[in-house]
Image (cartoon, rainbow, N blue to C red; front, side):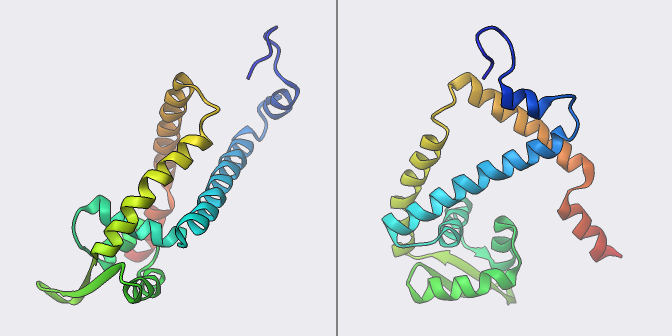
Length: 175
């Protein structure tokens, strides 16, 4: 935040300086914010619901889809490999949160869906999760959150235009 006399605060001045390595510093600050928020969410999910962030993410992806998802579609939504999801789904199935069944149109594919217990747990976790994120961003006013939203959208476009990892992975598969 600028000082009242319009001068930059010392840490901001040092970071901005002549602009050298500013993109790297921004990346590190973004990463720090994500890591801090994720650590808070992980701790609260464990303390309040006895669950993990990956389990929350699976339930959130299934809830957002509003239907069963194939293992491949679920993996894509979670941005992890199917191998990473397989063990998680097996454990969640044993705990009664999800169920697996063969895809009727593709016997090689498995569909994953939430059970009533999974839906109930998610319906309790989702509002708490939203409150935690709102609390984490409470230091920003409405104009600042709107500006941050817009700027992060432009950054997302810039990253995509620069050749993001998924595009690189697709190129390797095609080679």
